[in-house]
Image 1: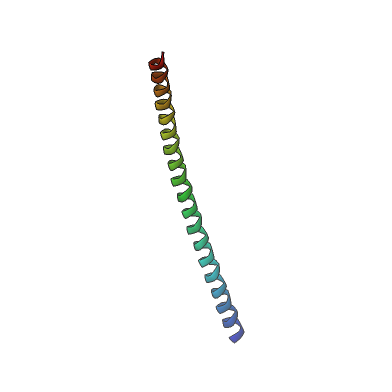
Image 2: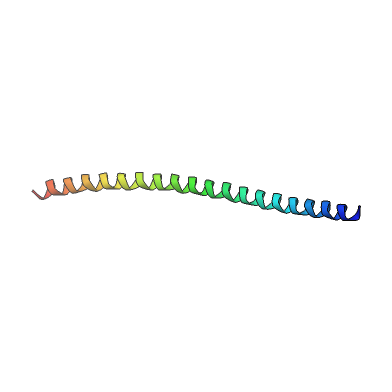
Amino acid sequence: MAKKNRLRDAAVKIGSAVGKVDGTAHRAALKAAKAAHVARQELNDLTKQVDALKKQLSKSTQRLKSALK
């Protein structure tokens, strides 16, 4: 009986370790997905800002050209 108890205890420890690793990996994956989502949103915001600046530069260039005529 003692051997069975030790085997069961070892199996419980192994199962606990596997569960902890799995939970840690799952949390890390969620954090990475959230970080990617935030980065994607920031990139979209920056793209919009760059587009607005391009438009503003184009208008300023047109005004300057017409002023120099």
